Length: 217
Image 1: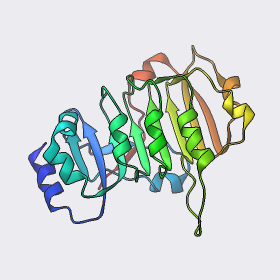
Image 2: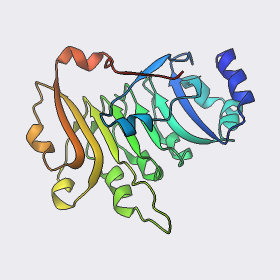
Image 3: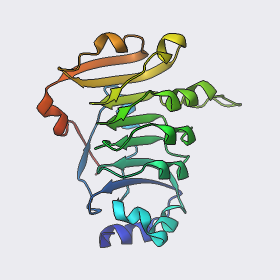
Image 4: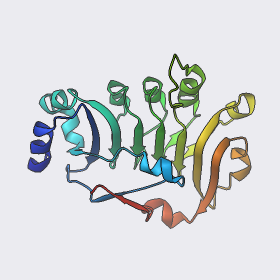
């Protein structure tokens, strides 16, 4: 863990905390914003602390992190496994870049408070774990945000979308970016969202970060 980040974590007094994970734990000055709705963009939980992927296996660092409620998590590097996300059920904003190793979304079943979910470069059998959370969502007493209101899938292959034709799922935003060579516009027409977008991207764009930024400062 970088010294500056270690010091920041040690001195962090807030109950809530947002994390960024990079290769060496170096802080990113800005991150991309996938959402088109301004209120959703402002709702993003910018990272307060950055750690490296190796830090996930450091018990002392993780014990310090677990003293707080993790509200946002931005993963900028490929990880071997994502099941550790189950340890952070309070996450409201989850972003997974370089998600080549994401083969299913089972870890989302524990993230019942997650409102915004962005994923890149994954190959998935379906979106069932996420949809299961939406089906099971109940509001007791005061109104609560719907889980997975905003979903962004960038260069992701999803084999089975039949569930969307069987049930109605409401989203605030649902944005899909697919290579032109994989024209799936018709497959995604069953999505119901206040803002739905399907973008075709060039093959070379699947390997570079989108140039829309939000500064941490």
